Length: 179
Image (cartoon, rainbow, N blue to C red; front, side, top):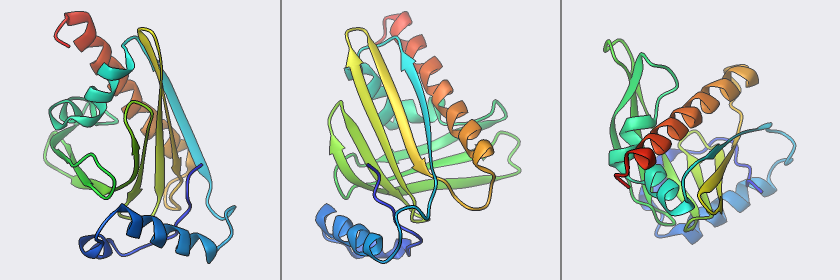
């Protein structure tokens, strides 16, 4: 279950000593508001690859830059990832023509290798990603709190497009035998 947090100041992350402090902050914020206030959106896919490979493709920066975009005219020229509780991540998403870019960043609140990744985005929303391996197939389910700027269906389609790109990237690598 995703912990709900409204809006926080990202500069707080720079001073937090560990993941426990982040969890305490999240719990404190949750107690101040109703859990139904934010809508959650879920996207999913099943990848023809074992969970160990899928995990690697999801978490290593050299792979993240190959799949983290929602449209063909965008790309991810930069990614960093400190995959541990209280570790930070950052992926730059940019239009290929140079007209726009932004950083998608946050801090990890829970990591269970090959099973679950939870993180807090800098705008205060929580995301949960689960990995369910079954032989040579892995189901990836991503649940995130909707933001209040774009319509939910636009958010769903954007996150699903990124997940679809992840599936294509993962299966291409596995099929090439370069795992």
